[in-house]
Amino acid sequence: MAHGARVRTLERREARLAYLMVAPTFAIVIGLVVFPAFFNVWISLHRIGLDNLNDVFRAPFVGLRNYVRAATDYAFLDALTTSVLYTILATAATTLGGLGAGLLLNTAFRGRGIFRTLFLIPYVAPLISVAYIWRWLLDPTVRGVVNWTLMRIGVLDHPVSWLGTRGVALLAIILFEGWRYFPFAMLMILARLQAIDATMYEAASVDGASRLRRFWSITLPEVSLVLGTVFLIRLMWTFNKFDDIFLLTGGGFGTRVLPILTYEFSFRLFDFGRGAATAMVLVLILSGFMLVYIRKVMRW
Amino acid sequence: MVARPRWRPTRVLFWLALVAVAFTIAFPFYWMISSSTKNLVELFGRDPVFFPSRIHGDAYRILFRELGFGRNLVNTAVVATSTAVLAVLIASLGAYAVARLHFRGKNVFLNLVLIVYLFPGVLLIIPLFAMLVKIGTAFSFEVQDNLAVLVLTYLAQTLPVALYMLASYFRTIPDDIEQAALIDGCSRLKVITRITFPLSVPALVSVTVYTFMIAWNEFLYAFILLNRRENFTLPIKLLSISEQLNTRWDVVMAASTIMTVPIVLLYLAFQRFLEKGLTAGGVKA
Image 1 (cartoon, chains in turn orange, yellow):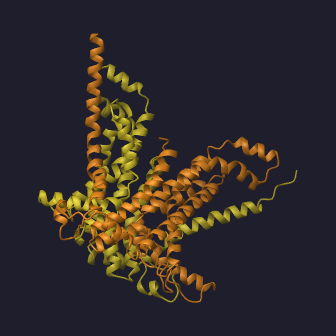
Image 2: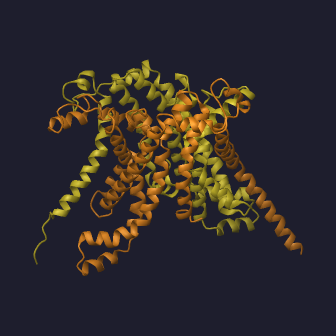
Image 3: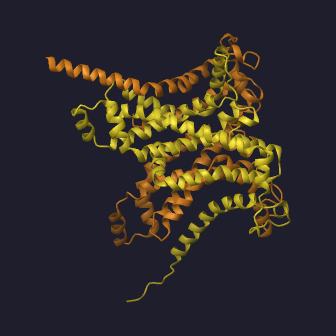
């Protein structure tokens, strides 16, 4: 009896210590992430501008008017379709790039470590630096190395404004995303590739399976799960992405995605309610992806 | 026996692909560094200069003497270091509790942390801004241009992943040593500081470096919260330089170089630890 009571107080003491230890993280996450997320719903239902930002709690309630004003804005539908197109294509580029690079690095050769280290650098380097490097490489005049080279070898006869032409700019951004984020996919895919049982390949070779055949019948099924996971994670983060596009094109020339529109409503027009409503649309679509992620990847 | 040909076609294709990828990665960074050391003639001549004959320091001189870049470098270093140290301190406590102690609501807490990690920054920036302005007025402190407030928002961004990474590392440490120490009469806190943390140095280091990198690179929150040039962190400074000196690519590339070098060096030094973290938590970027 006495022993049982002592264990119980020990347990209670341990639990108290645990609560103390998680308290700071909990407080910051609740205060600066969870509460703001709910507060955003509230903001989206009120009229909030620069004039009453200091006094938000007395802002007039406007119902769903912010949503209507966001959805009927001339830029909204365009931003929605651009977002979807950009997210899917950029994620596909990232995943396929990661698969290609992973397959290259999965073979044994001298200097593999060096290539592996090099391949990760686009992902590690600060975004702002790589964004400006590419703006300089893609400079719209002949001074841009890309234009100069393509004109020199006769592909172009006049310089192209890669980041300032409708259509081309979106494509350039998609390729940039692939270039920058493929290492993330590569790392995850490579880890999976290296765990594949080598005897399966040997058996297939003995049976006379070609290289392509072995890829289709062994490698692809083995990595399909990790490909799906990578695709889903990147899909969510790409869909939310603000800074990449903002830094490359400022959201112009057919690259205005929903996060850019959210920013413009809030911090260009100072129409915070409409910005919050646009963010809610973003989150609604995102929560669809999240649900799949929680079910499939976190196996909840 | 017939000797196998040294260069089979698939081998040639393999190396071609490898070198092509390596080139598209290495060249942009080479171009950044070399552009930052060119003079205007080399930079804006008829043909690009691929191998500059000498190194010019003009861009760096302009950066530090005329544009006050040193101040911004210090700001970023301070913000990133404080974020990293605080995040690791706070997260390691929480991570230990999650990994070792029993308490009610543990799974809810852990899942909350994981889901929070998926929240988009654009969703949070509006309410966070409104909230901070309100709190700032109530307690009469400046929200904008306040680097401490910036660090606080970075903690919110980095704590979930830091906690997650550390907890999964703590779980790999065998419990026996700690149990033995507890039976010998050590208190929990002593066990943590004398046994668990010393055994977790690789994880603590990698999370420190990782959170440092996040804070060093962060753009959106700094962009919204900082207004005065002298308070800018490097990403915002770079943006303002490029807007101010539109075509001085030597200066913009010099600033990019200074921003990139410390991060790449950190990555090279701690590569092994970092790679694990990059895939474990799935870096948000």
